Length: 270
Image 1 (cartoon, rainbow, N blue to C red):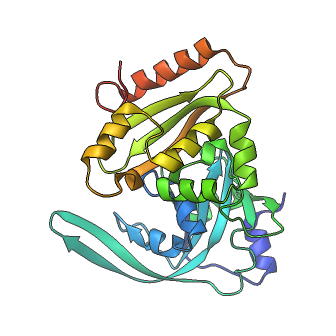
Image 2 (image 1 turned 180 degrees about the vertical axis):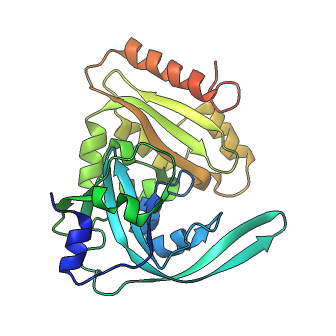
């Protein structure tokens, strides 16, 4: 596989002082931000002064060791912002011209086994290998892989309403354990699909009603003002074959409820 840095040189791009941003946010998915055309703004908002550099190589986590190339950005400046007891850094950046045809198309292989996400470029650049150059830019219609799913309710509704084929096929072929996170409170609901039921079927129910007849969530929506379901975020904890026994799936769901303490502190009931 060719190294990303070598591919960049072929296109005439030479970097100075740069960092590699491995974007994998939990609350607001960087992949979702990319699909919606707001990744630049998403990246410019930082809790710390993370970009003391001239350029940023932006990667978005897909699954396991795969990352989507989201462009190279020139750092123009930074401002320290405060509002009440909150403080953050707001960067000004500009996407480097001449790479637009590669943004969202290059899939990088990078084995990252540490927490840090703003990396000194020269230290890691040779480890970024081009795994694939997609024919077209990755879009929301492209299923990113089970491990990469981190859907807001808004985006889930879009996936269901458009009946996107890749999503429907992938989620219709598995049972398993999924997670609904209330991004307003941080509380979790661990759900499971089993006995021939699929994750797609259950998530369609969520997209339609907001609560999929889950009693604690139904009660929550009935007492909250407005469209509270837009605080919900959906991800997958574990997938199983459709032939996997009901008892096994339920035992795994119970395991995740214990791990996440979603009975004591979340929306699961005993």
